[in-house]
Image (cartoon, rainbow, N blue to C red):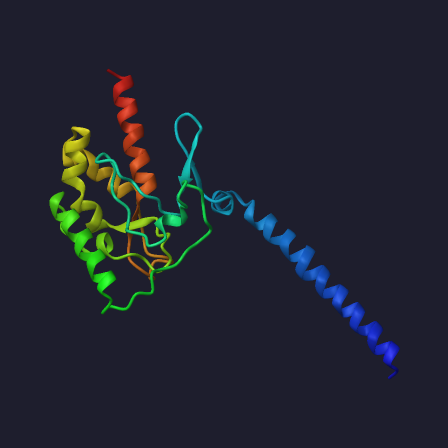
Length: 201
């Protein structure tokens, strides 16, 4: 075969693969993403409040500091928020070794803070996740915060338990991981419930 024929063959293969990978495949994925039960996740699972304002993504954790809110899992990257609250695009853990004095100090400080709030310092309320963006806490971590939330919102713990159950997501494919409570959805549901109760007074 001549060099020019091989060159032309290479050009044609490049164009075919470019067409498949750069146009056809992305368009196919875009089409699949518009299927009703996938559309929300494909668009970032953005949660809006009652006024239509964006309050975050159900797929990415964020910090909640008010006593009225369930605390999220700690995050080394502060849930990808920069100094001015703008997304940094960063994810990941601290990569500190178990013997690190810095890690030990952070864990002790966090455990003491939780004890001051009468919360048992269990693992996912003390340790950060590998991604630093985890939107879930364990059911036990939510239950540990139940009394604090009830006091802050002037509710009975039994009134909050149904919300925890509603926003507890099961294992992936029914077998992987553990059930987790989506903190953003849970906190917003409590706000919405409080708003509805005030409107009905």
